[in-house]
Amino acid sequence: MRRDRLTALTAVLLAVVGPVSAADKAVAFKDPAPPRVRAVDDKPSVATPVKYKRVKFHKAPAALSPSARTHAWTGFLGPTHNSVSTETRLLKKWPKGGPNKVWELEAGEGYASPAIRYPYLVYPHRVGNEVIVECLHSETGQSFWQQKFPTNYRDRLGYSSGPRATPVIDGNRVYVSSAEGFLICYQLSTGQLVWQRDLSTEFKVPQDFFGSVGTPLLVGDRLVINLGAPAGPTVAAFDKRTGRMVWGAGNKWGPSYASPMPATLNGQTRVLVFAGGESRPSTGGLMVIDPASGKLEVEYFWRSRKYESVNASCPLDIGGNRIFISASYQTGSTLLEIGKDFTSHKPLWKMVDSEHNTQPEELGLHWNTPLVKDGYLYGFDGRNEPDATLVCVDLKAGKVVWREAPEWDQTVTVMGIEQTLTLSTLRGSFLQADGHSLVLGELGQLLLMDLSPKGQKIVQRESLFLARETWCPPVLSRGLLYISQNARDPVTRTGPRLLCYDLRGK
Image (cartoon, rainbow, N blue to C red; front, side, top):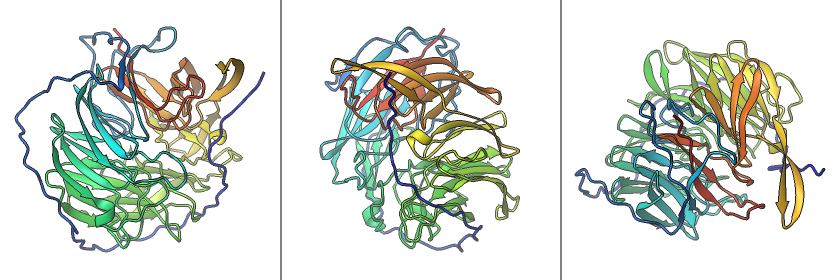
């Protein structure tokens, strides 16, 4: 039996975690190019969608259960900002062959997940030298509208050159961020342009390893972005209505590959930014910011000192004024407690990262966001595909409870030759919903799992496709599951697709 595992990056990079640094003093930043706002008609209207040649419709989904609880998915990691869904009445036992496929979109390049507010689904991808922003009917895949704009972005390390950020939907507006730093506001119902900015040019932000990645965080009437401008601002907030900069914060660190996250500390709303991308010397770490004023309250260094490294896993509010941050490249993880004065802070525990799972008490998340449940954290430790393991961590003690690498054999036929592959979740993505954990492996394997301090159990498993770079978290809205296939499947030879599956139960 032939056993084969696919690998990703191969470089071994060193890192040293530095001490706590004091927050910068307040710095006033000027908006270099406030955008022009176009007048649009905001009268309520829903256009009639039409068939779209790039979409293949398979089968209508089941009717929603009258008692099902549903939600919109209007930005990165969903309404809770941590991939925990409140939807109910989901399918627990899948049909043979996996959940029914509803529709699929032939997609171009990119690593963006869709944003959804029924009936609208907004999804950006790149075809040729254009970014296409699709607005489709979330249940049929039919097209409401489409917008295009040119792009010259090229990924320096040979990965996809398409958009990375999930759109953000707010009322009758949708905000799209591109890999080369464009921030664009469209009217959701019509696709009319409201305002646009070229943030990389305006703030003189050079292209780093992977372009502009983080999804903006909407807090009240402000879009918060880890801008990473040289000499600042590191983080900026823009008025959602006009696109004008409201405030800037920080002047030390560049943009990372993690998205800003909300937090409730001492009963008040704060924004968490895990900054740090390409820089010499390599710098970055956690920033805690008051979104009302832009005041930078905490700045905590947590970053590899190696040049070829990034911060990519989103910071998480664990509750009780505690924040979890993690980085690969021999950096590790820590649980930080923020004081009642919003400036004092201390690590409750730290865990190292050796990159190759050589130590039992290690944890270094590369880019995935962990799942937190009942006082335990579940995450995929490991920087590279073959090094990845699923771990359970006791958050109070800072100890690994168990570590496993779920594996199974799958037989495929490629060009008439039968092969048996040993597959795994590798560095997967979580979606907690209706009492179970959905896990999307980075080769396209979907699993329904029970996770507890006692271990992991695979309840259901299906191979949706066999393609690398399945790095977009799954999206769930109104009982439908949306999965991004970002690379070519060598078995079926299908290219990148956005797929909609029916998870509606009774």
